[in-house]
Length: 136
Image 1 (cartoon, rainbow, N blue to C red):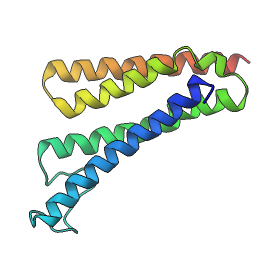
Image 2: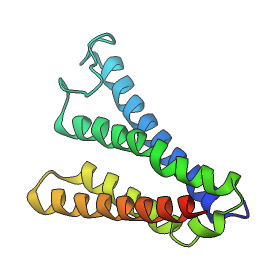
Image 3: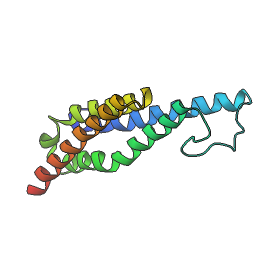
């Protein structure tokens, strides 16, 4: 891919997919070991370990952000304006990866603050891109 924006969009999708695959592998393991019935899973993994609950939430965060962040990348690429998003696209991806990784690692105060900081970076980039794209 010749556009950082397209590469980052693909990476955002791949990251959400990777989290989903991890969750489903771990859920399958629980079923195969007889620890959880296949029909006992909840979308938020509320009846599973704290890690599995964080994994479900981290995956949901990716899906919640994808229409906004991915949508802006798509608008820029389709509109021939990826030059506006290319410079910060890798930073958006880094912030998303950091947010998810921290979410998986801990819910301590420092981790929640770091996770919010990573999310705030993504939001700031999205607002900046929105302004640039709407300016025409």
